[in-house]
Structure formats: structure tokens, C-alpha cells
Length: 463
Image (cartoon, rainbow, N blue to C red; front, top):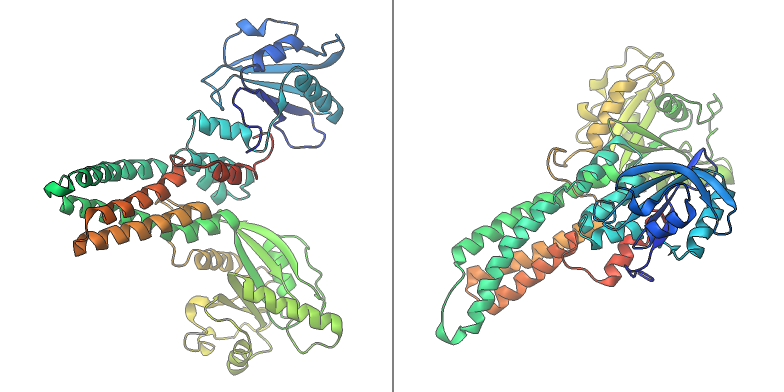
């Protein structure tokens, strides 16, 4: 990352852009206190205690008043970054913010790079790399599930367990490396059975973390959910009922929806991206044909498909014929018989057909009357979490962590195979070194400038 000298004092606006009642300007570095103290003439901040608030007036160096502010002081190492940190709470005028920023920069600070405050926290040992990444996830979280997952990771998550297992592996690796120095004497310092047992335990934990990635990804990014079916089946009505707002136009005229309509909705902490699609039929004009093509594309790319049909229109044979037209593959599928208020005598069991239509994926409801909507939502969550481990276990949601775990797993499995086949210790040591490298990249015990730049460049400036 460019301009990352820890000798610099950095400054940035820590609150979102735009006008508001208040804004926070954050400084971190060795000159934070002197810079603000020179502008804040009500009190000598250089002698003030850490974790204290001070109200007063902020002045430019020429004596011109900038604003009435509250200054928060955090002395190193008891701060977010581990350095001296000052936060200036001012009024949220963009003009005031700009003036204070320019004054601080003129007094010796420089503009912070994206994520530089959190990067300094990592470099000063205030958090490991996986915790630092969780800060960005916490800021970006848009559901309770994503918030809880990021918060858990920021407080340590699985990183402490990774560090512990890595330390145990290092002990064995060092013994094997020592054996190489005495190769002519045919000595064995590392007990092979104990090493095999440790590797198996680590592999078991790594694989459980890998398996959790599906759940973590669902919680973090949400579930893309396509609502498909014939025109006038009630797709837009269902979308509006779930969202409890008139998001899509509803009409008795078939083909009203010509393009996809997207909205987000949270159910039990899981974020769903609901996509109302154009009714699928033989298009009557060019625009409708484009809409149908987009509907099919959304269906193919979605994690969950809600197929809705008019319960007064399709009989069991017709429904099967209709579904077989679509490239559903192994999609998570819920089949919804809508307009049950007009056909209350429909028997669901008559529609069941092998693996395609079953009791567990067939739902009867009336979207316009909100009948069975809570049950539909329960089934959506159930489908979203199908085949993933429980949320009580450690969960990963970061693709970088997943890739590092995969590399570590491959190296450890190779080491285990080599131990079982009696291959010499130098090959085993090499495999273990590769595994340690991959595990160390997760927590930041092994880093490069390129890795840090990649991680922190997408952070917001003030964090």
C-alpha cells in the first residue's frame, strides 16, 4: 500500500459523505495530539488524560474560527490503531468538514489511504488479519445474520483456533527440520504417530471450516431468489405481499411485467434478493421476448427458484409438463400453487411427481390474501440453509480464507500420505511448510505488501 509509513499522522472523515447533524474527523499517528492541540485553544490537550472528551472551539492557524467541536482523546496503545488517536466531532456541513481537513493537512497530517486506520491496528497487533477483514464485513452488513457473523469474527472467531493448531504444527515441523541436520545418523525426533494424529485433527477442523463456507456466503451475500411462472400466475402480487409494499405493478392483463424487478428482504437474519421476472410464454412482441429471455437467465443464475402457478389453471399433468420445459437442474426449488382462495379444494398430493414435485417443496397459498406467506418464508430459509452446518459452529464467509484453507488441506493431506508411505522427512517438512504458509496467511502471521494492499484497498477511507 502506498504512503503507509507509521511515522506519518493520517487524517480522514470517519462518517459517511453528505450533510448531517454531526461528522467525525479522525487522526492517528505521533502528531495527532500536537496538531489538534494547536487548533483547539480552550485547553492544553497535551496534558489531558486518555479516553476523555473536551468541548471547545476549533480555530485555523490564523485565528479564524472553524467550528464548535467535541474532541475525543485516545492515547497509545489504548486506541483502535494502537497509536495516539484524536477524533473531532464537528457539525456535518461539508464546508466545515473540508475546512477542518485542510487545516489538519496544512498542519502536518496527510490524507489516510482506504483502510489505513485498520491496517495500522493490524500492524500494531491490535487485531489479526481475519479480524481486520471482519471490520469491513461489519460495516457492509445489511442483515442480522451478516452483522452477527462479522461481529463474531471480529472478536476472534476461528482465528484463535487456527493460531493454536498452527503452533502445534510448527513444533513438529521444527523437529523434522532438526532431523534433516542429522540425516546421516538416522535419528527421529518427531514421533510419526503423534504427527499423524495431529494432522488428522487439523484436517478435520479445516474441513469443517471449509464446509461452513456455503452457510457463511449465504449469510454474508444473501440468496438470489427468482420468482418465475406463466403470465398472470401472481408473481408480482407475491413479491408485493412478501415485501408489504407495492413494488411491482399488478394487473389482470397478462404480460404486465416486461423486465426483472429486484428487491431485498430479510427473513430470520438471511438476506434474500427477490427477483420478479416476466411471465414465461411464447412472446407476442420483441420487448416481451427480451423479458422472457432475462427471466430464464435469472432462473439459471439464482440459488433459489420460486415457481408459482395459478391453482385454477394447471392440473397435475400440465404442471409437470410445464416444469420440464425449464433448465432447473439441481436448483433449490419451491413450487407454489397460488390463488387457493379460488380453488380451495385442490389436493396437493395429486400433484406430487417423483423427485420433481414433493411434499417438502410444494406450497399452497393465496398471495393476495396473504394466506400461508409465513410458511413460505420458513421454507425459503430452510432451502437457503439446506446441506450446510449449524450456525453454532465456527463459520467462514471470506473467499480468501476458503482458498487458503483449501491449499492448507491439500498440503496436509499430502504430508499424511507421505508419512504413511514412508517417504523421507524432507518431503514431509516441505508439505508442512506449505500448510503453515497457507494458515498463516489467514491470520496475518504470514503477509506480503501485495496481500495487505488487496485486503485494505476496498475499505472506506475513514476506517
